[in-house]
Image 1: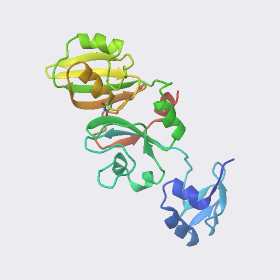
Image 2 (image 1 turned 90 degrees about the vertical axis):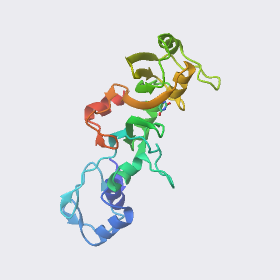
Image 3 (image 1 turned 90 degrees about the horizontal axis):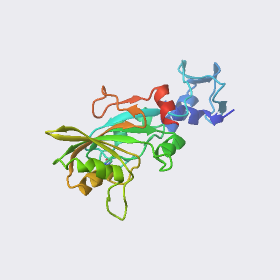
Amino acid sequence: MPKLRLDKYLKDQGVASRSEVKELIKKGLVCVNDVTIKDPGTHVITEKDIISVRGVPIEYRQFVYYMLNKPKGVITATEDKTLKTVLDLFPEEIRRREVFPVGRLDKDTEGLLLITNNGIFAHNLLSPKKGVKKLYEALLASFPGDRAIEAFEKGVDIGDNYTALPAQLEFISLNPVIARVEIYEGKFHQVKRMFKAVGTSVLELKRLRMGEVWLDESLKPGEFRELTPEEILILSH
Ligand code: URA
């Protein structure tokens, strides 16, 4: 069974920073199975021992998963000296769990972005071999003609000697021109380059779905929530 240092256990659960956690332990505020423990280096068994801080049990969860409605204007990175990142939208206790974004959306793109600390989960979702589908909605500068649907189905040349994989395009409205496109890969500026290839440009872009998981419409830009166990399962296949 997995063993962990007591201070790491509490830090990983987002209780406080490692040094703050050490202080809490030294002050005698932390119990393991109802016994006060004052050595931060004590090893605990994550699945068996009951750890509490000031009498409150702290359940062990190795991985956390969130869906964020990414707003425009923030970059998909974990930290940046000058620009606001998607992780700046999360409170310290979640960031302490060493979460990161799964893939990236451009600074001016909004919509569904998954945030987790599970590297294997993220890797599987991003792996070109898995070809997880992603649905985007785009506001376009002009109508590229119905032939764009066929062109997307065949695969358009997006430059740099690369032909995009076949993608499904549909028009939701013509005035304004709003399209939905489903793609199975995630090259740099992929959707924008695909529309450029058929003679128009993207004015606004929003990701609506990843795999079979939709962006929760109740989330305003900048808001997030935990994925449900069902959503985690769906995305893990
Ligand atoms: N395609 C783009 O062009 N931008 C994004 O942010 C995502 C997909």
